[in-house]
Image (cartoon, rainbow, N blue to C red):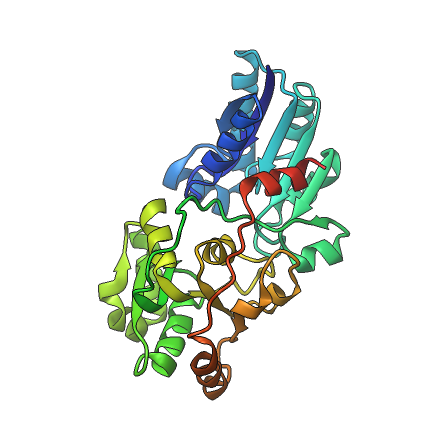
Length: 317
């Protein structure tokens, strides 16, 4: 049986599970490890403030693991790879036939892979700018949706997002433009108390206004897909430091929901239905948005499903 090692952030929802299940379906034995050690809050702090130490600790963890196991792999997949170093790539090369890396971040936000990207057999990104600037192949993300047939639409708009950057401000702006005429289903996930305090101190009025919708518990994958499937539109806000298309956009279109997003690059993707996307940048023309919604909210969406199988095919080419 072929063997695959998946190196991925294990806190990114069910990302690694979807990838693992796809390789298992392809008759691979799969191992999964985090892309940074130690895991948890301590690892996050180390990776942010003492990144050299974090990468050294990650290397030690992998060296120990690979020396104690049957550790020859047909393919190693690295996703994001914040704790990965050139030294670790050299180690992995001794235990694998092929190393493929994929970044669902931007180098502006996460520059660490720049030090080792030339050492792997294949490096790809979701980011339009990085693809052009560094001559890297760009591969779209996927939906991973399993919900099936969409139920009746219960809400005009939904917003299910992890709170970061200007997302709360974006939600507030869209809500002020549309809430008098349309219904909303809102769930804002806050990572931890530290990010909440930081956000509250930066935007106290917004955090107080939306306090009832902010939760330290994320929705399950099933509940998230259920919200998308029962919404006509969902809001998407890409991080200002990224130009790649979020998984939310692909999940929404697979669930039969249209998308309002700040990311103009959604209109450049060949894997999305552009007719069901409206780009509204923060501080944009509210009257134009309102007019568009009035004309298009009753139009039937076109369901587009880019699954994990297509994504993996694109990675392994």
